[in-house]
Image 1: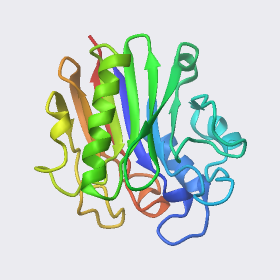
Image 2: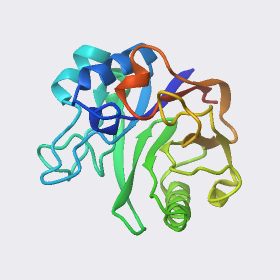
Image 3: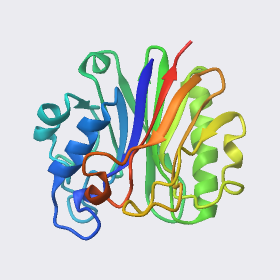
Image 4: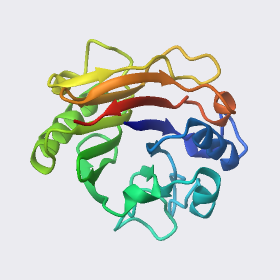
Length: 226
């Protein structure tokens, strides 16, 4: 059994500020994931310095970030994304960057474990970009991974019936409204996984300080890998 999760940190500024990463770390610790894909972990401009300080992660959550080669020295993620995991999983993990098409710069990250590939995404704002990005991700996933694939993150998709056509071969789970955090109305955060994986439970996490730590609530799922 693995507890996986996704969380858009909104640069650790809550809804309007100030920058307070300890709130986000408190939420992650309370969520108790084995693996969590994070979005907006870096500030957007300049050298893209980390918004979530890496020196605080292990002590606050017990998790470690994936090693991302090629990102800025001051950045935690790639295109603002990283994956945290239990330290015992990190020993056998390999991470691959996946450049994506679209109007604005975007990329996905694929964490390859011996029996599972986890792909973290933060898709574009335009539906045409999202469609192209999902098509690229699913095509690359078929080449680099075997059957056990989990794709999760901020899909930025407001509809359930449009924009997700490339995921026809996956189980697509929207655990519930996750945005905006104080009064969620839209299920922008989703999980898509191979049909041979067993979904045990899933949900939207609103405990700890989640409603004021970011503009998104984190989502989670418990899965069983055959």
